[in-house]
Image (cartoon, rainbow, N blue to C red):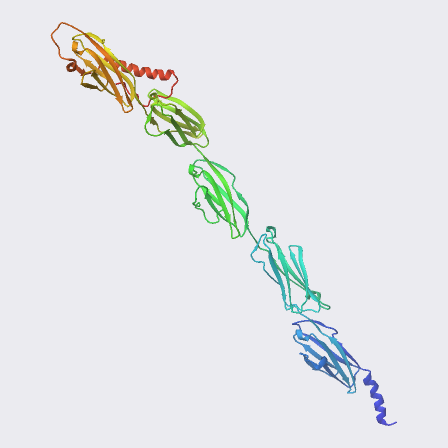
Length: 529
């Protein structure tokens, strides 16, 4: 056998026994990382030729580095286009070629999920929230889970063909959800993905907007006149509610600082008594609450009124009323005031009392006043004058010393009547044409004569009416020289006896009124004329 055959028989078995190792096998790499793959010829003593390739001779998009029996391919950085099958071909000693194939699996999960739609959530209003995972890819799928607080509320599985995985969660938030955490958690599924690279999540705080609720306001308050008091009002709401105070029955808001929960009054007066309203509002809505304030103190603003107003006449129905701002309620008294003192006409517990004169008579004329009292003090009103007008009545005529006299005597004629305003009194002899006037209803005839005998008429008149009285004078003849006629001797005069009779009549009427338990005394006691 020749030497050449011997050498060939020795080399051929050695080249046929080499092997190819490719590592790592079936790698799963993350986009952005740097990885190196090695292909080596084992038991190839005289050197190997190593080549990396892809089926179809497509580009590798990587750098290779060759050594004697091994070759490296460097992926720096790993990209989505490296997701392919790779072949390592090894020719040992230029005689025998072997290859090893593996598949590179690429995954991408560079960013946390992005939640949108959580701003300006309103209580009890439905809203769609979205969670997007961008630049994600994996061999299998990505699972997206929503949790609200500690509760899983929604989940979905999405493929990564588009490298974006999205999930929508429809929420109808309630007030209790405000401040809770809402989390979108994305988990990437694929063989070989390290556990620490499988999950990413994003958490936000739920901000639920809602109108003011649970308004808390001061209880009804009772304060004493002159004291300070404070009203408070607050409510829950998001955004934080602003507070505005106003007093009912007044369209003008009270002078308070915006958002002021406390309203302070220094030195309470009666004008501060009433109902206050607290208006709490935010951008979502508003709510109101009310509180009553009672101001107590001595009676104030006393008033006394006569109805109907204006001139009164006998027969009218007249009401005298007393009113007072009295808190707490006390005793109200209506009384008549005279020189002899006061007479209580009516009293009541409360803030008003009244008396009705039905019908009104002349004796009701006089001065009236009211008094209110409670535990804090007493107040008396100004007096009011009541004047009841009446036409003349009860007219009488008296002749002194007698209606039958002798010639030459003097006669005093006294006319008495009851009226208001004062009446005009005139006297004339029937059949005559002369009329005399007297301011006080008293006339005097001096040295009467026979021609003065006859019938006389007294006429008593005021704005409301009149009354007449007729009387007769008899003159007995006396043998004396002739005397002037009656009309020459009749002169107005004030008679003492008439004055006494007039005074007696007034006293009589006053006593009669008191004996009858009457409180309707006259304001003015017009004297008889």
